[in-house]
Image 1 (tube, one colour):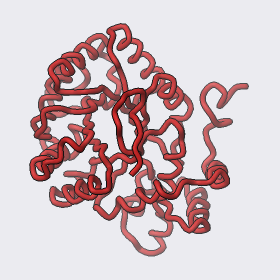
Image 2: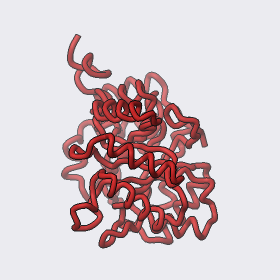
Image 3: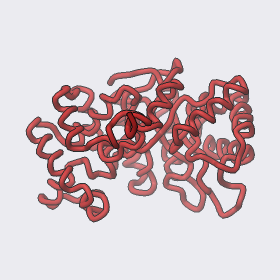
Length: 326
């Protein structure tokens, strides 16, 4: 396993992160534990979840499965644990968003489900346009002083949201945002316009989610031909068909390289200088193998150029405004 620092912090994290959105929704507790066992045995130390993942009448099963694994394994100290706050957790109006009330209550509920005393990275799952940053950062400061969280992160923020949030943190003499989770893969490159440049300028680590575009980049067309079940095959009409021509070229390139599409797609993300760790979403322990192979198979400049030709960046490429201006 390779390791790096998370953004401008001194926190060391693995170059791959284990995402647990499938825990509770797609797989049960035993398989979730098997995935955690395999990930930690492989040296992966960054585990990401959210209060809403696998929620069951407001109670997040994903967090509960991680909590039962901590209790069984005794390996809490080996994990950099990230969870999220924002999504509605009940029908009550104050059980959502980024008010100080909900941030603190959500953190305490997550700690109970996770069976831990602290969360390493407490991430805002979405921007809250109705709550002032002074209120948000005061709530985060309270949780940090209480020892319940170590760092604050974000997910699904625009570049200007990152800048505004960080400026407010600076005014309050706080470290501010240390990580941003954004959707980023070969088929979805919008983050290159402003999110990645903002994160790089502010010292924020980028943790791309959906690195395989819901399975479309995992060899979906080959799986269709071979009759192999999978998420991309099940949802081919909206996830694969709009990109069929590019995916066909991609799978042929991977075949010429002698590499699996999953491995190449992850290796491409690892080649991006702004990326700290792609967030994987396995549904079995075995599905960790191909992403991990990307660490041992970096892409050549020739391959990176070929991928840009198959999956062109937006506009002229690069950050805004150069992507569309001179």
